[in-house]
Length: 266
Ligand SMILES: [Zn+2]
Ligand SMILES: [Zn+2]
Image 1: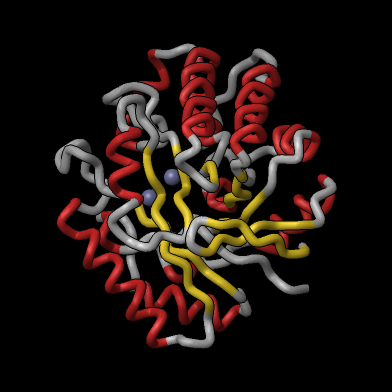
Image 2: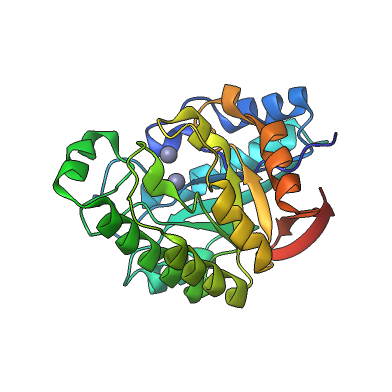
């Protein structure tokens, strides 16, 4: 089986990952991943917004490190990307970011459902106890729908992230998923099968099988990402992710070059 491209990996510039880009590239080559894309956490307009991303002044250094990986492993296809946080009011900043380097794609992710709460942050786990899970999921999917509608992103990241700690609403979330996926389909936006969920309390790929089935029904395309924060995580559980995609009905995956999609068989 040929493996799909791994489009989601980080670097130490984000302050919570280990291993230089060359090491991620070496691991990809060792396990037979044909193409990778670096998508580290992008800087925010305010450098002090939080403490888990690169500073604006490090953006050039990031690009240089990805270039070094390309030079070191010229036979591996390496894409240059960012995982960009979507928050309302950030669209202009994200547009400016897009002009600064020849990016291959942007992953749009929602981690923040307010200016101060990043719902996947283990340091803020106690916040979940103060909230109704359905309220959190609703706020999250509202923002995710907005993110897809902006047209700023080729891929939407880990689209059911609120399940990370295993806290789930009792209500049926299908209407929330439907609304988001319709927006993604209209915008021509892909979603990723992100295997990091398997390493978290939810013990499940992002997104869950039922959400992925709805995505397939709406012709929303897919990519694959390990969300590696360590070279050892590159391509993690990709066989399982491909099996899930195929079971769902998918026969194709996308790759991106200079922000244009290319279709590959799965
Ligand atoms: Zn991260
Ligand atoms: Zn993320």
